[in-house]
Length: 265
Image 1 (cartoon, rainbow, N blue to C red):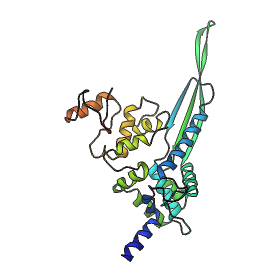
Image 2 (image 1 turned 45 degrees about the vertical axis):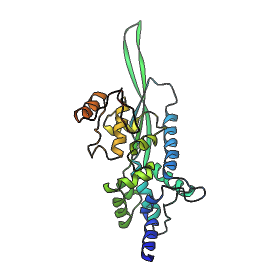
Image 3 (image 1 turned 120 degrees about the horizontal axis):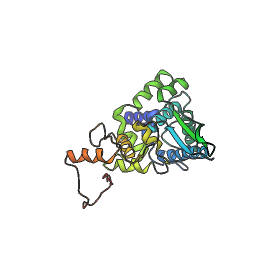
Image 4 (image 1 turned 180 degrees about the vertical axis):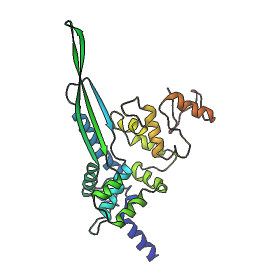
């Protein structure tokens, strides 16, 4: 029993302590998803602030870094160092450390593209179009390992944290759910995201697209449902609905909807 207690304590004080951080354990502490929500709001506020001005159109490019990678880098940087502190509790100090890692991994740039459209004559002198481009460039976990000069032990822990079989643990940390309604929890965690850029860019579009189906696919991917063949990766209603119909998983519109169902309009 003593060995088990010592082993658990060692895990909690290591970078893997991030998997024990889904509860508010101390006064002033918050759950990881709450800290993520704070930082996401700051990111969206910065993007919205850049939109101030008079433009004919605004183009959004790129997306923030993956939160699993941000948390994994944070855990290895914070708990993996010789003088580190555990990441099993998200108090204000640790939230600030997480915020610093996120912004180290996130660069937002912008520029205005000016296009002059010539007219056909004196009565039509033409016009000038102003397009604001806002680009978010994320850094990967591997890039941050280099930037932070991670030790070999930190790099090993980073690789193990991001291993595919840790998906259920990350779901609990990120979304407080590892159940059949996990996809609902994932969707709920995205409330406040304006513009849909993370979803259509994740799907592979270079510019803004109508992103409702991309969002459903993104949520499914976060849960591992696409790789498991439970939900397809789709960007339009016809493709998505045909996939479910072909597999006998289509319900008529008289069915009573339940959490987790995908509804096509």
